[in-house]
Length: 286
Image (cartoon, rainbow, N blue to C red; front, side, top):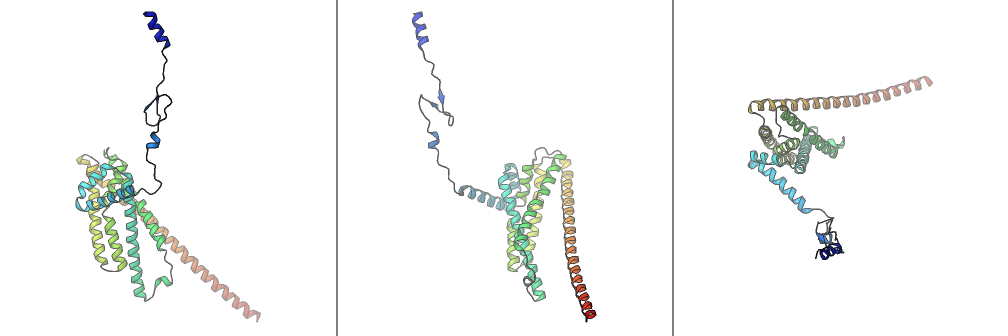
C-alpha cells in the first residue's frame, strides 16, 4: 500500500493556476478571458452628464448661499472639491469682468452725451482685451486673500485648514456675486437703474465678506482667544498686498501715459522745428 501511494504521488502532475491580469478571474488551461470585450466602449464625445452635474452643483451652491449661507459654506469647505471651486472662481472672474465692461460702457455713454460726439470715432477701445485682462487679473488677485487666510491659520494653530479648504472658503463665500455682477452689467448696459444695481452689489458684497470671515473663524478650529488675532492678521496682510499692487499698477500707468505724452510732444516739436528750418532755408536760398 505504501508503495502504491508513493507511485500515485510520483505520477501527480503539478498544474499551475492562471488568473486574468485584468479582472483577476481564475482561468482554466487554454482559456482566454474576455472581460475587456464586456466593458462598454468609451465614447469620444463630450461628457454631457459631467457638464450637467457641474452646472447643477454650481447653481445649487450659488442659490444655497442666498438661502442658507452659513451651512453652505461649512459643507463646501469640508468637500474640498477643487475642480468645482476652480469653475466657480472662473465664473466669478468672468461675471466681474462683464460688470466692469458694463460700467465702462456706461461711462463712455456719459462722455458721449456730454461731448455730443461718439468717442469711438476718435479712439478704438479694445473691449475684448479689457474683458480678458480684467478676468485674468481678478482670478489672480483672488489668491491674495486665499493665501493670507491660509498662512494666518497656520501661524495661529489652525492645523485642519489646508489650502484646498482656503480655496473652497473663498469661492463659496463669493459665489453670490456672480448673479449680482451680471445684474449690474445688464443695468449698466441698458443704462437703467444703475444706482439700484450698484446698491444691491454693495449689500451682497458686504454680506459675502462677512460670510468669508465667519467661515474662516469656524473652519480653522483656532482657539477662541486667538481667532481675533488670526482674522486681523489675514485682513491686514490682504489689504497691504492689494494696496502695494494698486500703487505699482497706478505708478506704471502714469509712467506709461507720461512717456506717450512726452513722445507726442517731442515729435510735434521736432516736426515744427524742421518745418521752421526749411522755411529759413527757403528764405536764404531765395
